[in-house]
Image 1 (spheres, one colour):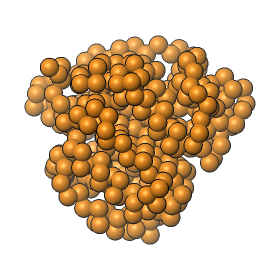
Image 2 (cartoon, one colour):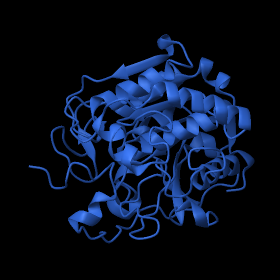
Image 3 (cartoon, helix red, strand yellow):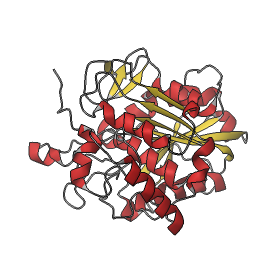
Length: 338
């Protein structure tokens, strides 16, 4: 029934056992250059992601809690769930079980004390949206529930929304883009008459203007300077005309899952996940970083984000290579030096 093994989005190392070849990357359609300056509202910077991207979004949110005001996590576990261990990543962080919330919380306080991450008190007034598909057999439902338990250690339950009743497999639910809800296949978008991007953005930002057809072209954003971060040469930015013309805008960072970067699905995620329709009418920039794939060193053949330590032991802190890179990309947009 399914064209790919159900573990492909979240467990990259198993692809070596299956003997899967890395597909030739489709060509993205964007061809224009990014603008040099944007006015970004510092109170409207948020982040989201799916699967490995959910783990990455959570890492950014916690480590840079002084920067982000909210996070949307689809089918991903709590901050530092793997703790740098592949066995934990493949075990409770995917299959479910005790992920050790108390230990994770204690570790966060240690990291705050050392300055490795921002003060967790910054999370108190943040808003969080957590999603788990009712038909998701890739990541156990308990993993997303543990994410909710984790965030409740730092913020009030009223600021958190947990959605588990949409009957979709492991993928990004959309209104009409992608495969049917019960089909697990690239580009891992599922047409379920459910607008996950819109729902999470409304939770993170409050009431929004109705969405419109996205009309702006995607702008390439260079990632070439971050050689040790395992990123592709460029990411993508959706910037409504109002933002390009000098209006103050919010910024949302959206992370793809494994095998969902432009290397694998072209611009399907960055144009079809649903964020841009809301960005167009709500003065919102959307940044789409892109992870690189590697078969041998590090072992990451499907271009997953680092949530278990393939870039080093500090992967989830402010000194992690991917964390540094994404923060620098955000700062460059704020500073107008992209």
